[in-house]
Image (cartoon, rainbow, N blue to C red; front, side, top):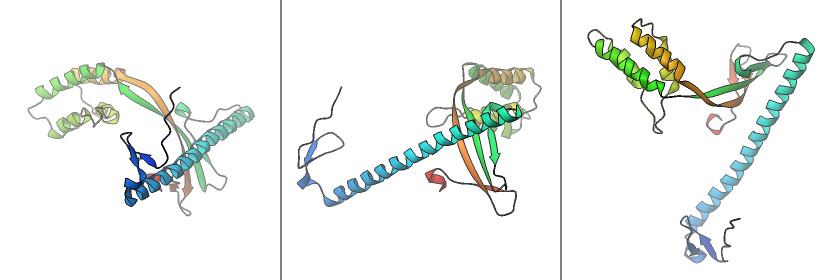
Length: 206
């Protein structure tokens, strides 16, 4: 078991692991450290509260689903366990969402070859926006990941070329589910309208 060596009294440890006498540390650096440490402690508390809420919410929803199934012999929930529950007055709704995380295997490269062949042969008279859409679909982000939504959207094009059809089939077969994420979303109805506003549970949305 690795243990961190105790920092001697009167010293602070910097980011490189070096010991710096406290007397040599500027007041502004001490104040920055105090602020960051304080905010991190508060953020951990908020994170723990959100984690506890998520666990309780999923447990309560699952218990309600079991109750409803037992009482009416009809399971609640849609595809992949997605579910929306409304309050009696319709003012609030809670959604349980399960979202698959997908990627593509090597068959995506075969699809790209077929698509490139089509684009090459279609150079004359091909709409430039189609070429742009295809190129964007296969662009990667900073982490080198392909946007799965853009690639799958290519299948919406009604193109009868046999190579294109084979490429779309390869894309469909290349999809691999590598995990899933679960979400709880809570909404409040806006006045007496049919619109709902999500109650933010993340820092960016508050």
